[in-house]
Length: 448
Image 1 (tube, rainbow, N blue to C red):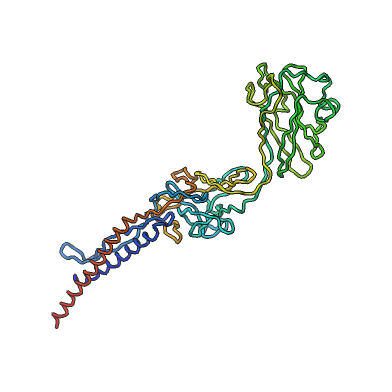
Image 2: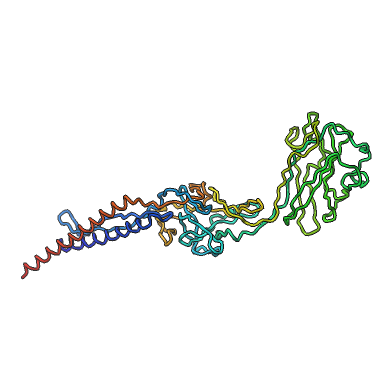
């Protein structure tokens, strides 16, 4: 039996080293594959039950693959904003299909060379679609991140253009402290067209400025601010009005397109006094448009109480120093940006920036136990354990490095060394078979 056992042991050596050669070859040809994880041959002995201290029966050897999925490859810089690498543990969620909710198509990969296809979906070099969780218009991420059915294939060209209505106006201006009150200031009445500023036929403002605003449909409109120095020191009458009052609903007691009326007060040191300033000026103003646009709700920032960071009253010419008005007209998507926290942001040509997707990172207790699939991807197995979905940088998940790719973990020096030793081991196994064959031939000749 020992001669036959030696012959069979040699055969197992051929098989084991042939398998090892296949793994080494696969590593070498994937030296430039993005995110590739090298596979190592692990040899183990085969022991027959007949083996004992008095008798030995050769069993041979077997080899099995071990993919070192948990090894981090070197980062390689890229010019593409949609090329992604993971620094640390975890995988991107990808799918073989771009159909939403298709959990059977879900796989996991670290190959982050994503580029838009003809339909705008982000795919890597293996044709796998990058998946993420949609962010709602308020910027909220769904709470059910553990449900793979909420993941969607990310489409960067299917994002629609948008406009943003003005909600905030911040002004820096100075009103001249030595301004002489209008001789008719005693007759000023904001509800009387003959003695207000908004009508255009009443009292002329001491200072007036028109501010452009954006409605919900991206249309440009105007708000005018008029200021009159009162007979009371450190106080100015203010009217905020729409120059063309025919396209919005006037709310009494306002007249002549007014949307806010009140008194703006200052302290003795020239800083704004918000305590004494009229509440109507400090509260958001509401404008109900009648031509199809949604109502506008706009807050005015007059500055910080007792500070000179907004409106001031110093003895220099009245002037508008700066104005900051949010909102934007309709714009088209001009590009996307992905940050290290996994947020996919759409960039519009009107200057708007909107978060549209969240890219989670999936981690496993034993990533080396994952099952390999085509395209440098993996699926869950009993050995890997169940997956955990995390926001990048939390819960042990790695962070995303945009405009970078993770290189292959293959070391060519190591692979060529293993190639030589495997070839030598294969040759030695053939020598075992040759020798055992010669011994069996000798036995056959004894019989003759």
